[in-house]
Image (cartoon, rainbow, N blue to C red; front, side, top):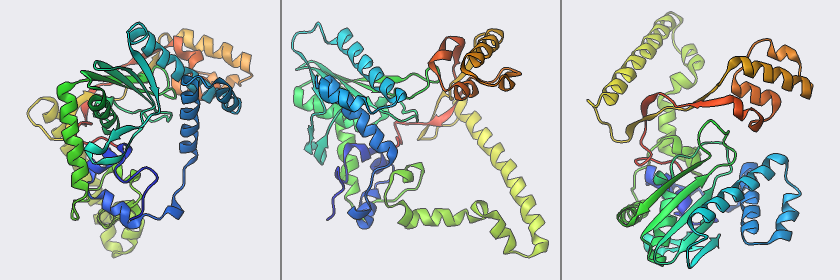
Length: 371
C-alpha cells in the first residue's frame, strides 16, 4: 500500500475523515507519489514555521540566514509569532517550577490508531499539571476556535496521556489575519473529561475510515481530498446540477419554445429557495427548530471608520506622502479598499473600529470541522 508523506490518517486529515469516512480508502486507490507536490503557499508556510522553530530553539545564526531572504510581510509574521509565544510563556509559565518548552517534537498517537504520531509547533509544559499548544497558521483564511479542530484535539490528547496532565490549553495564532477583522488568536482550555471524550471520538473516526464500505460524503471538504476529481459520489453530485453549472448548454439542448418556460422556472425556484432558507433560519434563531450540524453564532465581523471626517483627512495626507493620486479619494473609501490602495493594515488600525457580525445561522464546527 502506498503511503502519503504524513500517513493516511495523520492529525491534519482527521477533519476530512470525520466529514467523509470513505475518503481514506478513496485516496489510497488514486494516490500516485509521482504526482505529489507542494504549492507555493505550503512551501511558504513550511519556511515560516521552520524559522519560528529555529528562533525558539535558540538557533540564531540559522534563523538569521533564513530571515534575510524574507519580505517585510513575512518578517513581520515571524516576529508576531515569536511575540505571541513570549507572551504566553511569560504570563503562564516563566515563573512556574519545572516548566519547559518543547518545539516540534513528535507525540505518540498510536493509541488513537495514528501510528505516525503528531508534531505540534510549540508546547509549553508543566509535567503532571498543564500544557499549552500553539499552532501557527500562516494563511489568510480565518481558522475557527481550536475547540473544534481535530488536529489540535489529537495533539492535546497525546500530551494529556503522556504527561498525566489535568488540562491542556490550545491556541491558534494567525499573523496574516487583518487586525480588526477578527482576532489573530483563538484559544480553548480542555479539562480531563473533555480530553477523554476527544480520545474516544478520534479513535472512532480513525476506526470508521478502515471499513471497506465507509460512506463517501460530498461537501466543501472535498477540496482537501486528493481523490475528489475521481470520486464517483462527487461526480454524481456535479452531474445532478449541470443545468446550473452550465445553463447555456442545457438551454441549447432543449426546444427553443421551451427555453422561456425553463428560464421562468429557474427564476421562481431561486425566489422559492430564498424564502425557504429564510423560514428555516428564522425557526432556528427562534429556537423552534434544531438541525444537527447548524447552530446560532455571530456572522462575519466588519470594520468601520471611527470618524469618517478624520479618516478622509488622514487618507488624503497619506496619499500625498506616498505619491498616490488624489483622484482615488474624491470620497471616503472603505477600510479594505484603503488597505489595498496603500498596501498597509497597521497604519490604519487606529482609525478603525471592529463591529460584531449580526447573529445568524452558521455551521456547527463541532459537527463538521474542515481539514
